[in-house]
Length: 390
Ligand code: OSB
Ligand code: MG
Image (tube, rainbow, N blue to C red; front, side, top):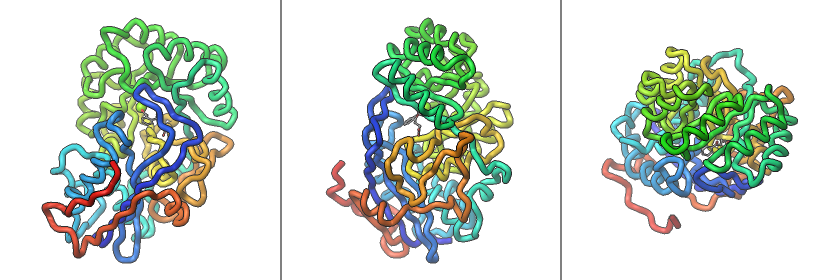
């Protein structure tokens, strides 16, 4: 295949309610939707960077710049023999994993559609995993009562586990109250998004250890396996790494140092599906369970997550909740609904099995740009375009 056209649509969709983490509050979902065409077939993907470099270094602007100036020039005029070829072609580009992931994911989706295979099959997933047990991520709340009410509502809907965002000062009190309200059996975990320091907070984290959490996610700095390994030894609760794992090599190192007892895999964070599968395989070999993280994706990103989760070592419920967790109206025509047994169904059909609803896409798009790779792109970059508004 040779990519003929690439379209980037910048979209803005309101969230049903603000989502607060230890690094900030989101009220809108914003991302690039990428449509990549060849031979009359189009593949889709979305980016997971944000307005500001808080979760990772990447931003909407950096993703745009990397795709336009570094990724597309390498793809223009280059025939691809297999979706893995994109991964190999983009290897020399350092960092910019979210940008690379979006392009690589759209190629995988294109491949599935062009060869009439679902993505899970292309990835080597398990045919029996048609319904994926899922959990839900709950943002930081103003008080424990609000947290309990939201958690009870999600359990009523059927979610299989609760993840609660924490930060120093908003952790012990709400989690204790939640455990007390829900009882000892409800699968619960906490995500700190790097808000703690080993020297300052080990006492506080030891107190969290008494709450029977499934795991604590990314308590310490993203680039620190050493302190995570020390902390993991000090706690009964398994330490799960998110931000720290950016590649299969990262996974190997973190596991080797015993810094991670569980790994959260996000396709965007590790640079694509090829890398996500490699992280999965390394963890599987080391008997470290993995689960699929989320980035408040639209239905497009959710579909990728569900296909990926059919791989065998995704043995814990992830963060891929139903569309109505975040959106009144999704980008796809038929939103993901939670089955009564707390699962989401892997979409059938070619590729990821869903497409953006054309009308909805137009409605939420605030900027549009397209490139014809057969004519306009040459190595060395595409001329800059002003007026992006970043
Ligand atoms: O750390 O997992 C995280 C959202 C944005 C950035 C980072 C994270 C998250 C979530 C939400 O926890 C997961 C989701 O519901 O998509
Ligand atoms: Mg996380």
